[in-house]
Image (cartoon, rainbow, N blue to C red; front, side, top):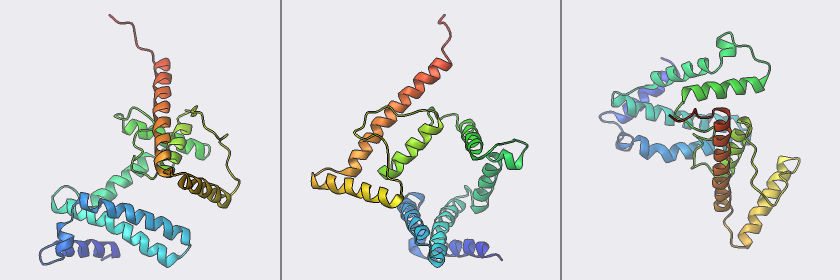
Length: 224
């Protein structure tokens, strides 16, 4: 038995008859906060450079996957093998330059192909900005929105008090961001809430420009 098989068996035992009452009563919804917490702890472990810490936190993230898989298995919906199969299929489908005969010239074309394939997979999404979790911390969401916008050929036009330049190093950038937060706090301003508001405004602007661009490229036919 592999270590992964052993883990799956341990989880089934914990949630089965005579197992752990706490584990048995958990649901996808009740576990959601733990997934967020473990993701943050994993990021911290990565930054620490400590392999033992990293291995432990990767295990905690894996536990969340196995936990959710066992909940679904017990309900007869899907199991860990199904999750792995779905992921494997997605990786093959989104890497046609590796698993098919698509030719690419560098990382930029890989990313462009990935985005195109993803759009085809999710036709219900009307915008390149769809799918970005609103619950992300404001700074992470800002980076995600701006990155998506750039890849979609949408450049923000919202007026700001800065010219968009940034310090040359992450250390200097961190100090600058911390200074902004400190200054905001001194004035009684909530930096997280302020950035969330700016992102909402930017998101609306980008979506409007995207809609106008798409309408210009694909004008509606004459009404009858």
